[in-house]
Amino acid sequence: MTETHNVIIDTDPGQDDAIAILLALASPEINVLGITAVAGNVPLGLTQNNIRKVCELAGRTNTKVFVGSDRPMKRSLITAEYVHGETGLNGAPLPEPTMPVQDQHAVDFIIETIQRLPEKSVTLCTLGPLTNLGNVLEKAPELAPRIKEVVMMGGGLFEGGNVTPAAEFNIFVDPDAAQLVFKAGIPLVVMPLDVTHKALTTKARTEAIRSLGTQVGKVSADWLNFFERFDEDKYGTDGGPLHDPNVIAYLLNPGLYSGRHINVEIETQCELTMGMTVADYWGVTNRAKNAIWVTDVDADGLFDLLLERLAYFR
Ligand code: BDR
Ligand code: CA
Image (cartoon, rainbow, N blue to C red):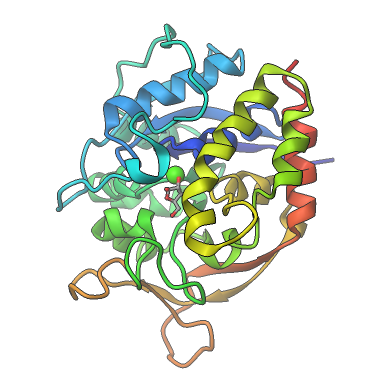
């Protein structure tokens, strides 16, 4: 029997976040308890709006959406409209959403859910800066041992950074929150640039998604075509890295991935390397292992899975 995961998705859509949400909503193995918005790719007002647009596109207006932190724990917000467009979801215009957001703050929802459900039964999937989870751990540090696992997109070692030579966007935006998460003792699975740069949205793959012939297929392909242009220019590749869906795909089929259990620390002091994930891949320290650092993916397997699941939306 396949395992069912009780999941909270914490996200800052973002076209790749949107595809990750669709993948989760299409998958019966994933029970989405709620989707929490954080400021990141674009400000919070837009990320919560975008989550609801995606849920409505998926026909899942009963999904509980919570509004979370509007800025990093200790710093000013940095956004990425230069990648995602000014709405965060440029590439495919969607109607303004009408489904509601919940009254409860996202941080309180996460706390209450982890308290209420049995110990180690909730997985947190983080697709943006770690601010909401950082605030959870600051407010209720005793909850850390109750969390089953955090699967996150963030960081980079072999690929370096994507916003500075040393730092990846999600960690760079809120390194203080990331530090709290990496020090909390929660089982962590990290999808860094090292793996997401191996999952390219090639023309053949986006056209296969478009060929589904559905609205979800068309919108997804249009989003990816917009999103990939920035990295195609930068790296000279056919397609750009598909970052965030790896988090959901890992839960659906961990066999697509390989990585190593290592120590990872977050740089929060040095200006030059701020937000760097200092990943002890070669075990040159005695620091305690705190994360599975994923480096490889069966990219064809990932896109096959994505195609199969997106086909669920008629
Ligand atoms: C990460 O930053 C965002 O631009 C993407 O949505 C992804 O979560 C990649 O660095
Ligand atoms: Ca994201």
